Amino acid sequence: SQTIHQWPATLVQPVGSPLSLECTVEGTSNPNLYWYRQAAGRGLQLLFYSVGIGQISSEVPQNLSASRPQDRQFILSSKKLLLSDSGFYLCAWSTSGGRKTQYFGPGTRLLVL
Amino acid sequence: AQKITQTQPGMFVQEKEAVTLDCTYDTSDPSYGLFWYKQPSSGEMIFLIYQGSYDQQNATEGRYSLNFQKARKSANLVISASQLGDSAMYFCALAYGGATNKLIFGTGTLLAVQP
Image 1 (tube, rainbow over the protein chains, first blue to last red):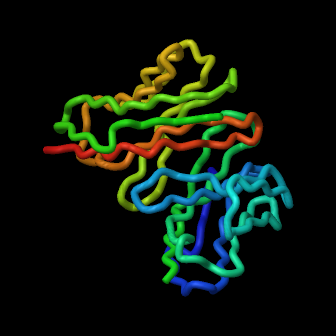
Image 2 (cartoon, rainbow over the protein chains, first blue to last red):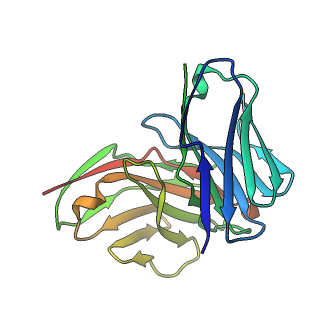
């Protein structure tokens, strides 16, 4: 069976500090990978998606970047965090192709102070 | 452009009763998918049910069913025999973008099941 991991679970960072969130998937090959952000009391907003190693697409302009150095690893980064980067970050995977179910990781709660 | 609308910020239901959570959508894609997810207070997103735009029958998964009305562009979730553990946020989502399989989410409905 497939599993998806995210770490860390919780992170408190000062404004201006760097960020690295990691997501890994087990039990599948060549998945589509996704990063979402959920602000408090809001729905999910798609930030980045990837259909293969090194292939990253950004959905919204922002202070963040993403990378996919390995088939089942997806990393969300920032060089300098802003207060507005606070939120709940969720990674998801799906099999390739359209209208496939996305399965989510446990998420990372980020608080920027 | 794609759009998902959930107009019920919060709902109450008595235990063992049925409840309907509303979702309307708009898309220019001829082929699309609709999903419902549950988010308990722990934050995890749990997949509940899927409906394809060309599926002839409404989807069902245990106590969950999807009332899909294509002409009205609605995809309401029906939960039968509500349980206390059903208390959570519920999100409707629309799949678009072809093979990239992107999702756009609604703002969610907070369901509270009362004993």
